Length: 54
Image 1: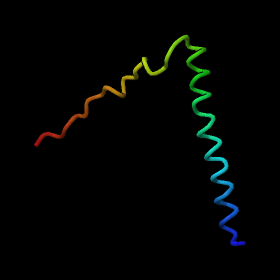
Image 2 (image 1 turned 120 degrees about the vertical axis):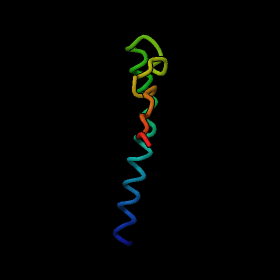
Image 3 (image 1 turned 90 degrees about the vertical axis):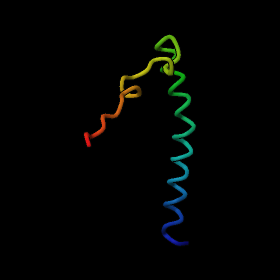
């Protein structure tokens, strides 16, 4: 076997595992916070970019 193939398999394993855990972690945080975290906005989402004067 080529040495890269096992490394890619290991990467794919951890990548799939991380994607599976993300919704579970978010649901746990929401339960602890007492609601949906998506309803709370950070100021960064609404920040307006400042253009350079021409």
